[in-house]
Length: 95
View 1 (tube, rainbow, N blue to C red):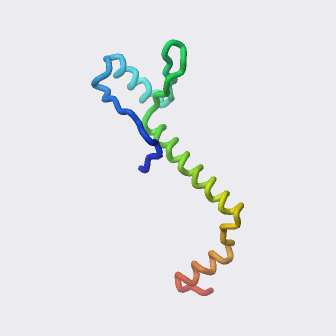
View 2: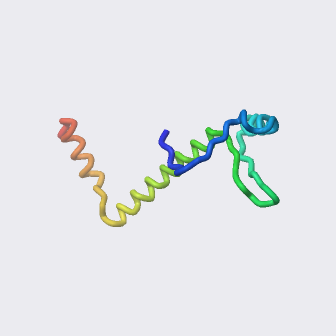
């Protein structure tokens, strides 16, 4: 899967205190993100990797939609009938 994240730090679970193992199990079981805080301030979010990957895919899709809408607003689009005609010609079906 293509990742749009520029830089992500990685810390192996085995390097974290035993509490982290239980914490990771809780996240994996609940499938819900957990807000991390330090001194009462929000510092990060921990979530199952499947949720993270789904968010990245959704962001990529939304970027594609945004690009497409901008192209349409600039007149950089082709109507359905023209696309259909081109496809039929390419596939050898003029009907």
